[in-house]
Image 1 (cartoon, rainbow, N blue to C red):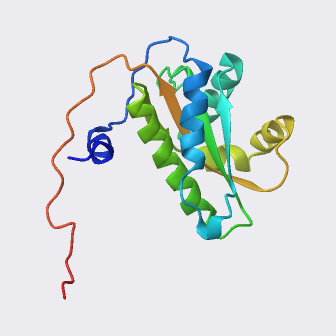
Image 2: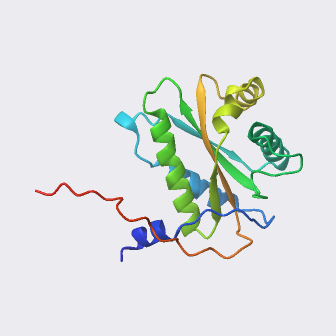
Length: 176
């Protein structure tokens, strides 16, 4: 089987991480892979915010926890030490789709580089809030951006599970 397809089949979401710091070079490589995702009309209207600062990571985790309605102390980033936030330009009609493809590339790249990852939602709500908009401005990001997701990253602190069986009947053929 093709190595890329093997990686696609074997990738799993990780929800338990070691605290070990990830080398910046690995995060850069993953982020670059994300930027090579297809985009509608090649607009490339997606940004990635790479977060390795623990204070900012924890602040985002708390925002996400509050939006999700979990009790104090819960970490919706599951202890991952880094995250890549995917943002899509709200003025581009394909932004959500383009950002989703970026997320897929990020998670696949992380897996083949030996890191765990997971798509964490609620970025939309985070960056629609005044606190989220102010955070983006503080990072020099101007304009209207929609949060697509957080790709949390880290070294897994658990074995990768086997892929579950796929449900039958999900491919419909229209053969000629």
